[in-house]
Amino acid sequence: MPHPIKGEEVKAFVVLRPGVKATAEDIIAHCRTQLAPFKVPKDIEFRESLPKTLIGKTLRRQLADEDRKKHGQVAAT
Image (tube, rainbow, N blue to C red):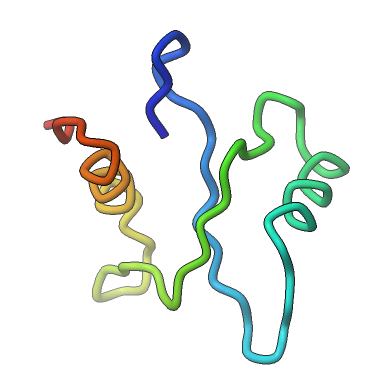
């Protein structure tokens, strides 16, 4: 996620399993117990699915580009 001073901040894209309920606060609290402070996401975005390659890897660059477009920034090349 773009940040005016740091350059980027951590954002998590979350797909919940069917029947599971969680809030952004729940996920951030869990991350605080499991991750170093600089790795804890500042923002959580819930999605129905994540873009994947044919072999099942998550297309992280596509997620970043979509997020930059939402914030009115030009995608990195």
